[in-house]
Length: 415
Image (cartoon, rainbow, N blue to C red; front, side, top):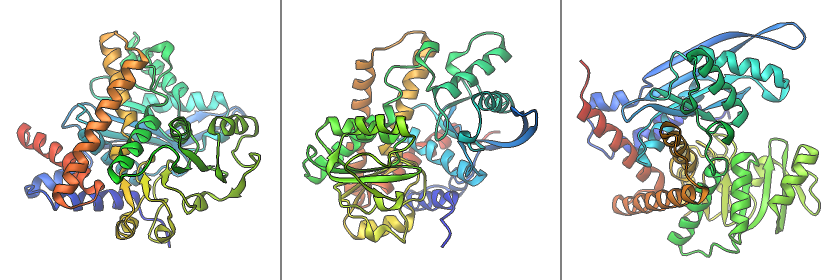
C-alpha cells in the first residue's frame, strides 16, 4: 500500500477541524489553498566540471498573520505536495503559538550526503537567489529543516545580503551565533518536545522520571529530545537514524550514542544494544514514542502495534489520519506536531526579534520564555480538547484555524 500523500493528510486534518467551526464557505476554501507557490529549475556546477539541473520549491500557505515562516528541506523525497503540506502545518503551528507569522516551506530535491561541501554551497546560493523574489525579513523568513543546518542558513543569509549590498541577519533563522543566531535555537525543537512530553505525563497522571522513551530519528531534533529527556530522568530504550536503530530495554546514554554515531556515521553497533529497523523502533515497548524523522511513519498498517502510552510528534505529519483513529481507539494519547514540535518556530521568532532589534537575550531567558509559551499553549489545547470532547490534534487545529480565519475575516477580502 503506497504511503498517504502528505498534502491529502494535511487537507483531511484541516477539514476535520473546520467542521467544528462555522466558517463561511469562501473563508474555508481560502484556507484550504496555498497562497502562492514557486517552482524553480536551476543549474549547479559540479566538482567534475559538469552541470546538473536541480528542482526547488518555496510555498507560502498563508501570509494573513504576518510574514511567512518555514524551513528549507534538502532531500531526494522533496515534492511539491510535501512542501504544500508542510507550509500548511506551519501556518497552524505559528497561529497556535500566537506568533505573528504565516506558514511557508521550501526545499530542493537532492541528496545532500552525495554532494561535496563546495557543491552544497553552490546549490544553496543558487537556490537562495532563485527564491529571493519571495524572501525577506518582512516577507518570508526561511529556517533549517531535514537535510539543512546552520551553515546552509549562513550561505542563504550571505547570498541575500550580497544582493542587497548590506548584511540582513533577520532574513533567516537558525543561523550560527557568530552572524546573529540565537543561543538555545539548536535545541529549541527538541526542548519543546520534551516539555510537551512532560506536560502529557502530567495530564495522564504518569510519572515522567523513569519513563521509557523510544525516539525514531536521531538528527538535530531526535538527539536533543533524547538528551534532554534523559537529563530529566527518563530511560531512552530505543533510537534510530536513517540507517537503522538500536534497542536496549535497560536504557541508553544518548550522549554516548551521539559520540559513537559521530565516529561511525550511524547509531547501529553501539555496544550492548540489539539492532532494530526504523519501523521496529515504533513498535517497541515504551511509555513515550517520539517520531522525529519524517512524515507518514505511523500508519493504518502499524498503528495497532504501537505499544506506547503517549506519542509526541517531533516530526511534522508522522501520523496519518487513519493511524490517529486507531491510536485514539486504543487510548493512546497523541500530542500533535503543531503543538509538540513548535519550540523550533517559537525560538526562531525570538531570533528574528533579536536580529531586528540588535538586542540579544541570554540562554536562560530564551528557555524561560519557551517554557512559558509551551506550557500555556499545551494547557489551552488540553482544555479545549476536554471541552469539545476531541483529541489534542483536532483541538489544536480548531484553535489555530479559528485564529487564522478570524484574522482573514477581520482584514477582509481585497479589493
